Image: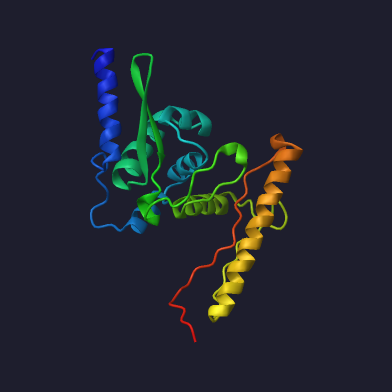
Length: 213
C-alpha cells in the first residue's frame, strides 16, 4: 500500500471510531459493566492510567510501562477499544511508512458525556470524568500509595439533610474548590518540577429527591 493509501486508511479508521462503528462493545453489557471489565486486568489498568495523563499509542504506552508491545496492543485495541468502548482512536500519525494509532479515553462511556472544559496541563488542575476517577482510584489502591503523602484519604458518607442543609454543603464544596485551586497555583509558582499527581475533590450529589418544606 502506498503512502496515500496508508493515510486514507488511517483517516477512515479515525472516522469509524468517531461515529462508533469502530467499536463493537460487549453485547448486553451496560456502560458500567464495560468500565468494570476494562478495569479487570492489571495491564489494562496500567494502560488506562497512562491515558488519564495523556493520549497515546500502543508503542508509546508499551515503552512507558516497559511491557511487550503485542500485549499492550491486544488490550488497547481489542479489549479497551472494541470490546469495552472506553477508549477511542483519535488520530493516525504516519511514521516511517506506517500508521501510529493514537488513542484517548472515551469519556461518555459511563458518565453520559464529558461535561467539563479540558484544561491545559500548565493550569495544574482539571476535572476528572467518572471513568477517570475510577481508573485512578483502582490503580492507587493496587499500588497502595495511600498515606504517602500523609493526610491522604478516601472517605464517603451518607448524610440526611434538608434543602437548607444541602445549600450549606454546596457552599462548603465551593470553598474547598477555591482553596484547592489556590494551593495548585501556589505549587506551580514555587517549583512545577516538584509537583506530583494527586486526586482531590469534595463530592456531593443527591441519592434521592430533595424537596422544599
